[in-house]
Length: 479
Image 1 (tube, rainbow, N blue to C red):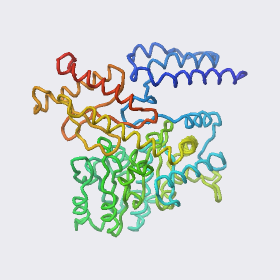
Image 2 (cartoon, helix red, strand yellow):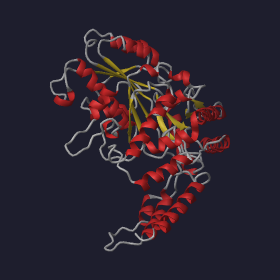
Image 3 (cartoon, rainbow, N blue to C red):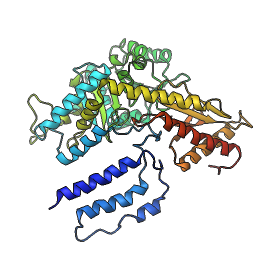
Image 4 (cartoon, rainbow, N blue to C red):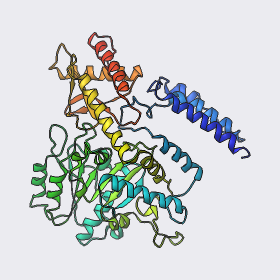
């Protein structure tokens, strides 16, 4: 490659054009898959093409199919944007091209990750000596934490699972809330426990685990003395509700051999916001925690974080050894903390985001998004046929569109809700997805982007109301 500068300058211009467009572009693309596919060359080239042309052609073909999820009116799947410093740090991460698995393969990446980990622990009020790993997302972070839990509780029962596997091991009792996120049960599946083996504890009207029901399950004399892993939630994926973490910690730590894990994919970050930190009370008493930096910390995809109070158990369950791997004597080998050998230097974007926001800036971002979620709810609730189904305690809003002519007809309300969601998505002003909540179809709005303003919420509300009015008049196609 003779002209790096020209290629990178052109790429930077294309990236700037994209970033400049996300505030006002249609949120979801209106090109279908066939049209998008036709924009990409389908043949394998015999000879290499000019790199700048490759990038220009790639951007030209891809842009019509890009979702403006970094923009201010994307409210699906709790996807944050990326604060500017984290985007720039991600560019550097690619340019540096470091394998961040070992200290010896990138001392700088190891030390940056160490500093980023320490900042995350300080922001969340967790023990400063906890073990921290940077994974692809909450799925693999849950996997790492629950692997550490498996290692610890089985070790206490006299079984070395790393050496002997699960065949013949003492049975482990798994307990989750009825509203457990799919990534947690998926991690249990990957760990050999099975995705459906966990006891499910009833939840309250807002989706939080019922502490009394948990205590009753834990006291079951048939299983009380088994090694036990309890997975609680900081932030229900539909409602934002927090399990009663203090009461859960009391119950779990009263057992002879138990581990408490908290899945806080986005709710974890409420600990960094003074007006919301009460929601996380008791979280610091858990044995492990999971969160996503690419949600509320607003760094580029991908970056999940696994945290374990006693680093020994995370390292024991995750560490990789081989004769040719030059393990550090004292410095951090990042691959000791997650199930990845060759890996991207994910700590770099976390470092940049935290340094650019500071403690105060991150708190303001989180508190502003929660205020905007309440603005959504207040603007929509009470309109003809519109209900807010959840207590808006965080950044999640569930909206139901009943049929005004038949408000008690569940099937009619489901049909109208789905029609409104589809119409809003077609309109392109905003994007929100659908869900099912306690047997009712609902629109699910997640506010987690640093770019979102009150004006964006108001524009989005207008879009929703237009769709709801059209549905009432029978002008929307059935879904």
